[in-house]
Amino acid sequence: MIACLLIPGFELRAALRKQPGLALRPAALSPVAGTEPLIGPVTAQAERLGVRPGMRLGEALATSPELVLVEQDPAAAEQAWEDILRALEDSGFSVEPAGVGSVYFETRGVERLYGGLEPALKRALAAVGTAWDPRAGAAQRRFAALAAANVARPGQILVVSDERLSDFLAPLPLELVPMEPRRRAELHELGVKRVGQLAGLPGGAVAERLGPDGRRAWGLARGGKSSRVRGRRPPAEIVEALEFPEAIGNELTLRRAFGALVETLMARPERGARFVRKLALSARLVGGGSWRRSATLRDPTTELDRIKAALGPKLAELPAPVVELRLELVELTEHDGEQLELLPAAGGEVDVRLREGLRQVRASTGSGSVNQVVEVAPWSRIPEARALFVPRDD
Amino acid sequence: MVAHPGSARVVRAAGRLNEPRAAVVEARVDGTPTRVNRLPVELVREEWRVVDRWWTEEPVSRRYFEVVLQSGENAVVFRDEERSCWFTQRGA
Image (cartoon, rainbow over all chains, first blue to last red; front, side, top):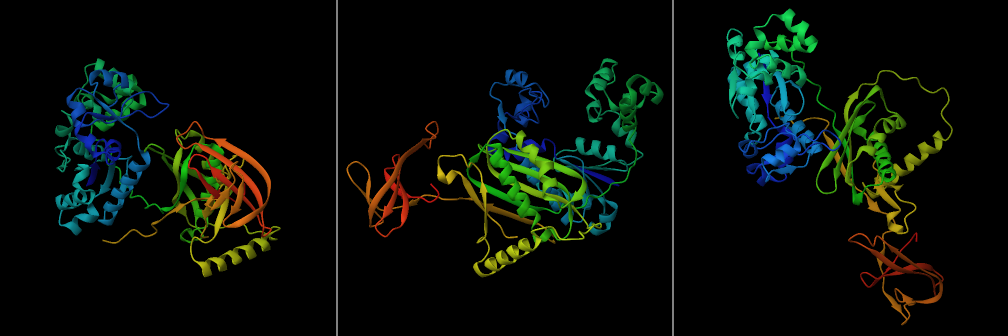
């Protein structure tokens, strides 16, 4: 069986962990800066007052003037989600995440471990914890498992057998089927509002009228394919963070700090000889929010300049001054052959001697004794604002 | 339960280079220093002011002196006019 574990409104729940009092008040996740002003998930209290996720901000505030907008905290959400995935993996589930708040796993391998399907799903819910209100669905097909998890109540398990599948899906709202909003609106105009109504239409006619997206939705409405779940490779998680003595908003300063982070992170012994495939850069913003961007490199590399070139430009997208900058190696690959130099580069020997000297200083004086000076605002009239020293343990 | 391997998070605190250090300074009525950390001042070589960040909640208003002490040592001291106290500083 394929199981789906779902935590609706995960980003809002993660953002509310810092201000739990808001969970009982009408609150909604504020729109992302620079995008269409549509609100994200909402609390139960806000829903009771008529506010719906995806509503226009103005409309939501007009519907409920006391609505509190909660700032997005993508780094906190990502971290909380990673902790949940790790808790599931620690319990023996090989997980395939499908975005933040939704994860699939195959139950066949763990059913014998926990004594059946339901005990295994209960174990998965317990691993996540009741604070997140997770719900689980299981079926032979992926979409059916997702639909079951959507219908289940918090802490509930819903198992749908293949024989009951079409009866189960038929009365569910069409919103459960992922498709372009334009296609959904078109179907609504045609009076198709339930999954069963869409499944009952002839496939060829749906494809002709709604195109490939509609054809895919039609396939899902009939239960979808029984594709296999592919467990992820747990991330490497080598993280380096830099806390600033004061909030930094200057891009040049941030680029220099980022450069120092890349050098320190790449020199960490945990990386070994592995190459970097995916990295993530996140920041804690002044005022409490956070920001996160990740980059997957076309070719795995250990070249500092390539890594800097891949993530450095994203610093320009920071919406506010930063109090902490964090860089993580998300995915590492094994060494797959490298052309060595015929002659060592000029200055190579000096570099080796310098590293050896620094290693000896560190060995005698302890961790944190060797620092790198990073110029942050050399033009400043205040001497202590011109440069920072960043500890180096490589 | 087995902990995940390879989890290695390090948070380092960056420090400021040339952070001011509190100093014991005796000064004349006009504000020029006569003794720095109990050492007499031989000569005041230069004097300047730094006024910055007045638009923030942490304004900077300093009166700097570059002095030569009787021991022959060069030093830079400033009076923080916001907090009314003296500091020495390198790299000024």
